Length: 150
Length: 265
Image (cartoon, rainbow over all chains, first blue to last red; front, top):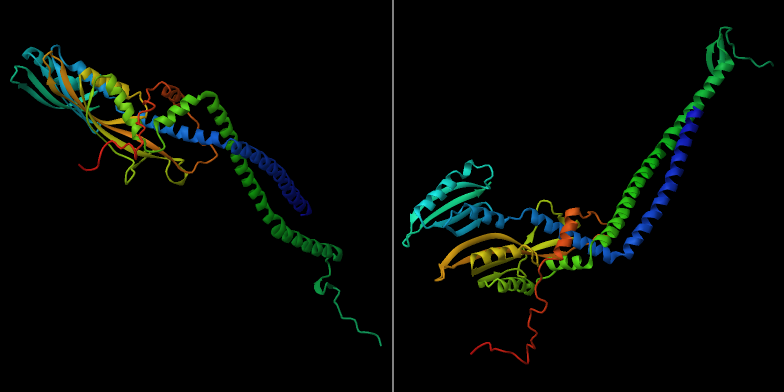
């Protein structure tokens, strides 16, 4: 019993002394580091502000809509002799755009591309609706369509 | 007179006032009793003195863990700070502050836009610049820190602008806008043909909705919690190359003595 009691006493005092020394050591280290940071508080403030701003910019960049990519993709759909008459990116999802072509042949070329769009793996849009061939007073043809970003 | 001794049978012994069988070893019994009381005393000491003090070890252990964490954080903060100073130039810091002003500075936004439209021969048909107003619209996304610990809060400054010009120049404007300061995000874009000129050139209208940001400093903690990733450090370097608004965009006027207009006719 005495052995157990002595063992307990030894364990208790040993650990208490160890933690006391170790914690005092750590406290002095923490105090030293804290003083070093306090002395450089202007630099720290700069770091915190700049890094928060960069985090924000980085997050915004990740969610950014790449309009140029989509515009150039739409442009690639326009047949020879035709041109884009408008594009409207609504809520970053549904895109309307209109394409004008000068001849029936080029219109048909466009129609074929658009109709086959949903089957293309590399297409970045899904065709939602196609407002087909409209003949304008100047003899040109207009096609309006709605697409959704894949 | 002879005192009368209590009559104890041969078969019994009286020890500590207890009647015990005669065959019992008196010495052994006394030892047993002493050991029993000594053990009892030791158990009492152990239960009420030593064991409760084991909690002190746990407290010290927890304190040590806390101190180690604190030490690690502070050391990491200093390390991050040194790394930041080594890798980020003062020009980058300046560019970041320019990308997200800490107060409403419409002149910088307008100067930046006018600089780009001027060089691309585009016309500004109309614009509305919000912000700096009655009620700030704080913006945050899921990954943003909220509450007391957030060192910065961001307020959105919306700009609606309509430009006209040649389609290729409008697309170039969108391209240049992506690398201009202050930092803005295009939230809506609409392009439509207005007219076709005699020389077969098309004039197109571009309507844009853009969000700029104001960063307001809240409570800045001395401990640096997050370090910058490689891509963010790269972004910091790239920001230096972004186009900037003209320095002296705002006209310096002596408002009282040389007023240039009148309020009423």
